Image (tube, rainbow, N blue to C red; front, side, top):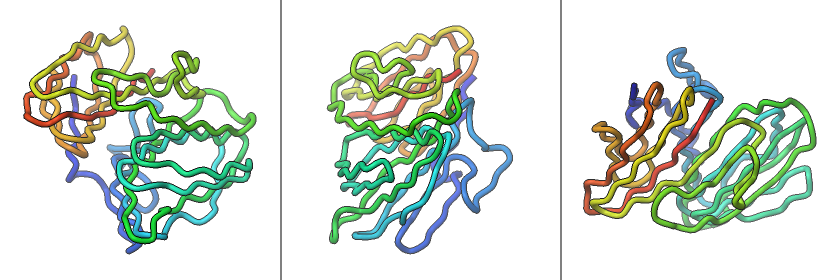
Length: 231
């Protein structure tokens, strides 16, 4: 079964400095039909004006992934990490028993756009952690996040994984789904055909009870999507 949430159906919050689209309930946006999917709790598509950002604030017991689409994030946290995260890179912050951080647009002239993703951990407390990596733009499925940290992936405290999908024009691949697992796809660039269902940028697909997925790019442009494997 594939259930699509169209980009234009997402919640929205606009504070002037921040224009955010919410796939799931977040902040002042509440929809009991869209509270998350499996352990995936948040996907926010954030656009931040130059030099603006999120002042220091706290999190605990949440796995927080950031994926920069345009611009650069300036990150600072209470664990002593002072980092910049440019377009194309992934960051995983494990909040553990508690961490404070700030995120700003590092540019004074260009906007920042990034996806903020929250996954609920399967262990509570513990030492906060920070990981960051550029996985490149390899064609096919590139493992980004895993519960073991194998193959150089970012190590998450949950039985979940994340792949970056890139397909060249008029190509396809088959994704085998482990029995009992669920898959969520967030479409980033161009249009992706998933078992005959078309996803456009910003669309999301909740997928369950499927044994395999045919992922096709029938367009003349490269496709980028995020593929989550979830319990």
